[in-house]
Amino acid sequence: EKGHPIMTRYSLDPENATKSAKARGSHLRTHFKNMRETAQAIKRMHLRRAVTYLKNVKEHKECIPFRRFCGGVGRCSQAKQFKQTQGRWPEKSAEFLLQLLKNAESNAEYKGLDTDHLVVEHIQVNRAPKMRRRTYRAHGRINPYMSSPCHIEVILAEREQAIARPEEEDKKSKKISQKKLKKQKMQYRE
Image (tube, rainbow, N blue to C red):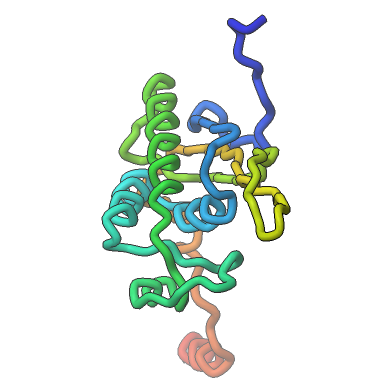
């Protein structure tokens, strides 16, 4: 029973299963809130860009903008590029995501996809069951000291760089004004 991994459902089915690859991580010991913000930052990003971005986050060259879980988060000038004021550099979350993207890329390569054209189509972070420790307080009391792990799932999809525009649009003639129509009619009469 232990030898076979349990196939789990993803919250979203890829549009084209043959052109996409999946990866997931469960019960990861990194803060859910940090991971959620990091995941949102790389959503719909090109895979190569996402990897360099996360590496830059680890080196504090670019920040993760904190949008939802931003109470008490300090301000940084690097957040301006995302039109935000608050940002942080969650290194642990970035490292976990880098490993997950690497795994998803390997899965894509195994499926025979072109890894240069992969895009982070779907990424979702869920709360995992909390792990319990305890901390000691004044007057001999004990309080819980919980960790907030998370589950992550990611789907990479292969995208062509330039989306070809249908030719019919070009062939459609532009709307002609009434004045121009009258002018044309006059020319025909002559």
